[in-house]
Length: 323
Length: 221
Image 1: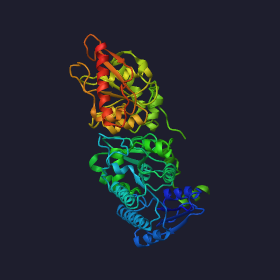
Image 2 (image 1 turned 90 degrees about the horizontal axis):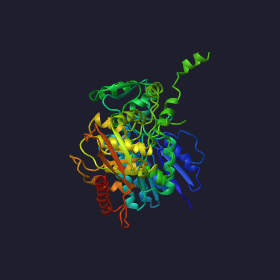
Image 3 (image 1 turned 90 degrees about the vertical axis):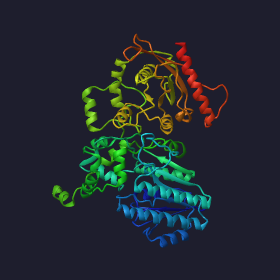
Image 4 (image 1 turned 180 degrees about the vertical axis):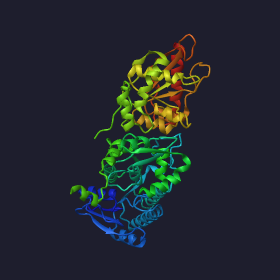
């Protein structure tokens, strides 16, 4: 039996890792990916098609021609990660609508799983601080709303085609090879933190993110599922774990700090400011029970790995030191 | 690579000051998603234990591991939850996650650091799924007369784990925080008939059963 798998966003770190894992599975007879940048690692049998998601007609034509059975939708772009917030929103919208609507029209679709995030829940209200999947999403940032729109589009496909649809609500994925505004901010020498709160947030290791995506496909996970690293950390603590200096920021000054941070090379997206000010965690018990994520990498180990990553050394300076 | 593990479920002896300070400054201490900071909580527990003298009976009913709910009476203030926390530590060595962290800046953060969680159903359910021992006070009876009403907002979450009733009584001369407290744990609350834990009616029956169980422990004492 043939199973054709389409990985959107294959050029990202997570998309590439998932493609590597899927091409090692016997059930996946064909693996194809699309993105506007090439994959980050060597892929042995997966095929890649370079398409900018904004070229919706080309993307839709490609999907219709390939007629995938399974879609792993990583074409969800984080603002200030590899592009501006406006561009991220546009690419996410175009990629999601073009891919899903084209796949639904082929009649071959059997399963869809989309990358989402804990940002869909919005900041903790004080009443619910560790939301499970039954909590009502109330995003307050553009990225959170964008993720919720992706989930809604996928549910629309589920209704139209009668197929199960999974939505993996990842905690922020941070790692030495993952372009992330939060990771970049935490690696600044001086880390902005809230002057009036120090809320907990959870992170997710890229390997856990990739493995749960494959597990969701294999087990045909239906509905939303929080994917969260074990434990939590606070912004002050994270800064100190990396030997950085925490800079307390009063509530009215986050705009100015965002501009300064952008000049320093780490643009601050609203969802990152939300995380620093209000925290971001979730209940990962469904992923433990249904996806076998029994021992996710602890949040503080994810942070350590981020900080252990060697600093960038200018080639000229490295040459001088070697001489 | 391993996390700095200070057990979130079991109370430990406070570290000596210098290593504790070093750990604080370098950020090497655990925090749980609800905001608990075990290092700080372990530091403060001896102060609570010194301020609130507690006599414990029926400690064998407190589960040594796994998720469970301890339901107790309470009056005005934080004396009963504090006495209950000290009693649970004496009986089982476990940390009690008291429900009812106030939604007030600074105060809420401070109580969460010490282990409190919010009184919302989803948070209580999450804490139980994570295997914590959750303490739920019944509605306050301002003059400390009997057991108050059970919290209906979290009733559905309570059916996820064994429920142990507890009675907290002032036994000191002044009947207040200055005096001593007696904490009595009772056997697990059960329903006489078979039930489906997912049914709202089962949750309602449990709330009534736990109120009766706490009331019986109070009147027996």
